[in-house]
Length: 178
Image: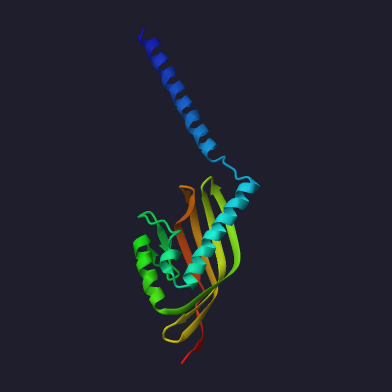
């Protein structure tokens, strides 16, 4: 009688293990099968591109507060700066405000935009362009290559930047205004 109970227990255990494995694998496959339609991609591209244009336009107007609106004000936000430093939202904002106090002008030129559609509400966006700044000291610097990669997450029907990494070429001093 003990032999029969052990066999039944073993069969029950093996069946449960197989069922658990099947359930776990099928759940993983379902969540990764979301695919964007071409129409959805075009809508997201337009929306995200407009968000980035707004950031650039506000930065060029030296309206840093408005330029910051699309960035997620959350402890989870992270940015890797061109100098390799890493900031959360609070420190990114503090450094941005201080940086803009040093400028008399700021210009960016978009060369290319790239999109990677990761899942339903998550898009990896890369902005490739140039930047030119004029400092209050009179220096005018040109960044021939400036790249920003941003992770956009659609939260409450609004695209928010939840992660960013910026890279720039060494600035070339174009002139010193006296």
